[in-house]
Image (tube, rainbow, N blue to C red):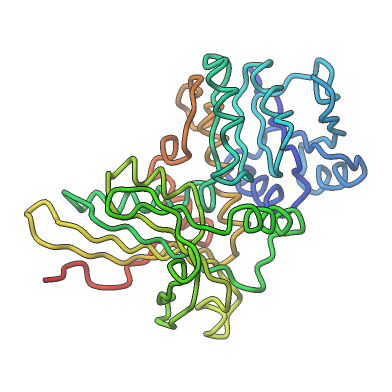
Length: 338
């Protein structure tokens, strides 16, 4: 049975393009609908992608202006304050993946899920790079019998814009929630002011100044590992590759401390790096989630439920695709400490 098109809402931006690129690399024939308010822009994007059609999205209409046109899944690339895409997905009983809301904005979506939990598979894709951070971190955490501390430091190259929609969403998140959700000594707290200021080393060893950021990664990593201390920090500057005279990249530094399976102290430090930047890494994650949701990976489609990305992405498969896509997971320091 042929697959109905996957609908990209706001798919004309950088991340939509990168998602389509990653999908096409693995599944060249998957049909796509590129939805937006500007039909000409959507059609131009669709023509560039190939095997795609541009459509106008009317967020005020129950059918999004699509009529009876069938879709197999919805990927939402902008902040949908009206939950128009989610309501449409639940009505059509198709999976829904959104990537732009902040940790403080998910209550309406959770309420929608609780109201009709058997309607759709709903992915809270608000993790940093939509699962790339948590999948790698939880993969690395398997070396530990007990995790005590997880520190994630994201470095965004100042030349890595991601497009105007990403910039607007990011400004909104920082304005609405300047404090950083953190787990400290087993309790969830909000870091702010001097308490939120941090310094960390980039891949090349350069010390950077950053600040705490309220990424939903903190909640998922705390739940999955029960680590009493989990924090996420963010800095903008020059990426390690650009300091070396190469094109910019995006870096995610992952530091884990705890005890290994023999009871000895263990500290690891790794980095997820993608040499095409944040949009490419995000697009890869979104593409692989869509593949999993609709069963393009050869497995059964995902059942209705509420999911974090790391619950759907298999680590080894993701890391293999990451390497093929121009990224890698790098070990930075020795693993064992006294």
